[in-house]
Image (cartoon, rainbow, N blue to C red; front, top):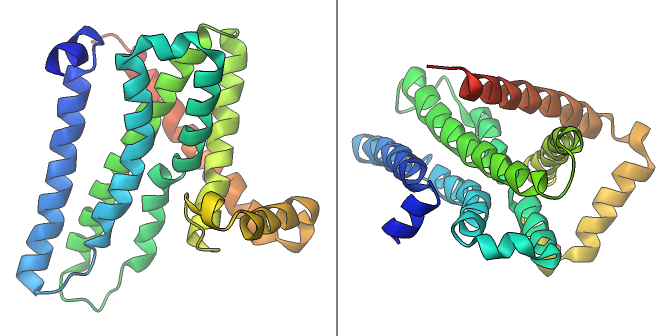
Length: 221
């Protein structure tokens, strides 16, 4: 496994993300042990869901044969898009911050931001992988536009998860109810201003962070 990761130039990235994940887990464990409560342990589950899109694209990088099949790429993109909103979703867990808590608010703020940043990195790194795959199929300009659109779609997914409480797997367990909620908001946008307000501004925020991230990654050291 290590050899495959090294050959695919994924070893450093995998180790780094593993360290960040362990740090977040230990962070939440410290809070649990200090307060004797399980508050915020759910962040570990949210981070696992954010890990899935990165795991999917990482597998496609380690197994480059997958990238040669248009059907495989389409399936990969569908599953990736299904789980991608979980990456930026953790930022909305800031809603759980309370002034009256068993821990100082600064500690809980740093705890949530640590999970949110790690989850966002999982999402952005996976989107970067998607771009690398698509570069082989379509022009770079179209890939850039596609990335922007995917970030807005991901933002819509964040809204569905935070406010309507839909999960990624509900597309299988409750597909008709989910499609009704999505269709209603598309067909009647003016009746759901909160939906599109959050989607647009969250999408702008994610695009701002993502393209800043890409700019930094290209800067010579």
